[in-house]
Length: 223
Image (cartoon, rainbow, N blue to C red):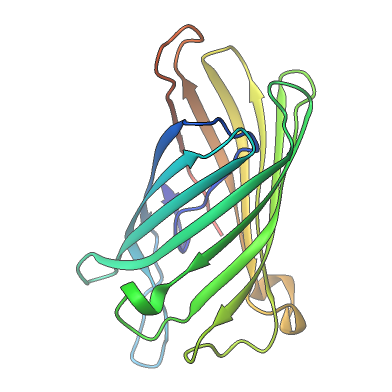
């Protein structure tokens, strides 16, 4: 559940891959507290957004992800907003240890699947995990570039996803999540003009001896 005017779902990736493992993750949000728009305002406001990510481990160091995203703009019907194809290479597996490092790259072929003038988008960056004791710190900074005839970007943009999570028990944890975007690094502008979203979250996990692993997270974020 995302408050104020957050733009979409955000992902906190994990470093490790497992050969043959199939994972599915749903990320959904309801947005409220939306500012009112008038005829002169150009506001892209979301009422709901839903994202499903499918992941497959080709090896213990290489995985693929497919992520369609649908959104419901305020006052309109649900529509396909984007689709992403990602690959991730594990450089330093964590496997329950204290440090892990991976490199991810993704491509969004919006011109092929999404109605409208949204450009295709390419992004890449590291996934970093540090796990001292009951803590898990995750940082995923990414550079992105618009591709195709619809692009109007002068230079690379920057995005990040970050998490500080504390495991209270084996079954649940508390976390603070952070996400941000700068559309163009050469025109970053003041901090107030950028998108930065922060908020608390609660995680509940399957039992350690469960045959099928699952987790559930819920929280609230605001700009």
